[in-house]
Amino acid sequence: MWKQTLKVAQVPTRVVKSLIRSKITVVQTKAAKQAPQSSRGPVNTGATAKIKIPTTKQPLQMPNEEKERALAKIQYEIRTHHKHGNYTDALSSSEQLLKESREHFGKDHPVTASSYNNIGLMHKHLGNWAESRKNYHESLRIYGRVVGKDHASYAAALHNIGSLNNLQAHLDTGLTAIQRLQLNEEALEHLQDAWRIRQVELGEDHQYTIASRSSYGATLASQVLQTIKSSKNKKMSKLTEQRWNAAEDHLRQALKQALDIPQHKDVKSTLKGHIKTLSAASAAQNLAIFLKTRVTDIVDEDTINVLDYDVLAEARQLYEEVLDARQELLADTHPDLVATKFSMAELMVALGENDAANELREEIVKSYDVQEVDGSEEGKKA
Image (tube, rainbow, N blue to C red; front, side):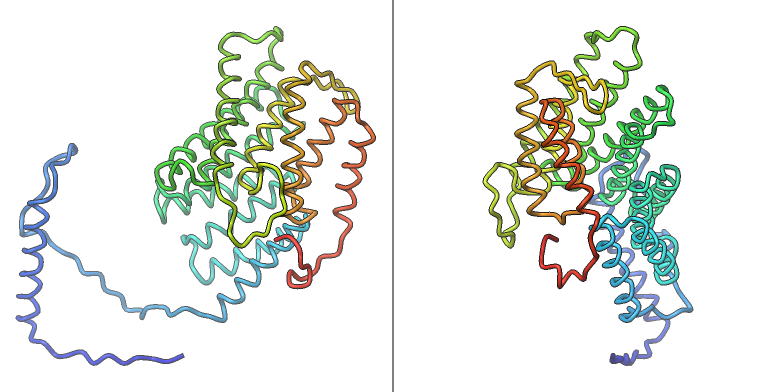
């Protein structure tokens, strides 16, 4: 490391004041001519505004390369544990990263917000809904304070909370029907807000914008399904059918947009189907789940009634392409790949292919019986 010494010329105070007054007057006059009238009130064009120049007694903090290398190492550990489905160790590393981030960057900093997000993600995977929500909301609070509530990072935090609520509504067996509907409603609000911000900040066709739209459609479908289940009359009302169709439209449009995202030039793919990116795989998975849910009635683990085999065939084709893509692009233990195998196994049961379903379930079990290795030795699937 080297240091640069600056020699500051001694300028008389009266000259400095004169220069400052001249500069302020020029800037304010130009701004007064260009600035439009605000609907909130008139623009102050006076040249007598007081300018406060911030001062600090502490010198600017130079980057601590050793500390930041240590933080990067912890982040690598989190990614490795997460990739192998080892969420307990990933959570421990995430908590260590939060501690180090708060000490190094402070409590209100984007890196600290990201650290809270990691903890929220691991708690979500472990089914610790309350802890996940608490950390996700802290991440949201920090991003809102530091970068603003119209920023893409704030939208990401909204998206994460919405996805958490939707997942809990599906998996938490301790919830009442009313609690599930409430979680779905909150999820829709968060995902819609995330989608709106991302449209402005990132553009309609950005992968994160598409992800929020797809998740919004999936959550809308989930809400409709919960409404049907909680109703004594199992026949859809006209309004319910409209919402069901709206959910399908969001899911199909999101997939259409995702398919247009080009594959990264450095990825050497052997995929033959339409789905060649993880963004397209996520959108296709959401649509496949929707189609499967719409035309099946689950009686028990081994008995599923099918209402429309043509629709189920479309879902199967989507699942097969998603499975191929995720097997090529993800590690065997990645939660997204496991989710595809699990959901596809349910579809196999619906088609009466119980042996094929059991093979997929065995693959899931075997995939977690692995030794974690360094990424440079793994030589496979980032």
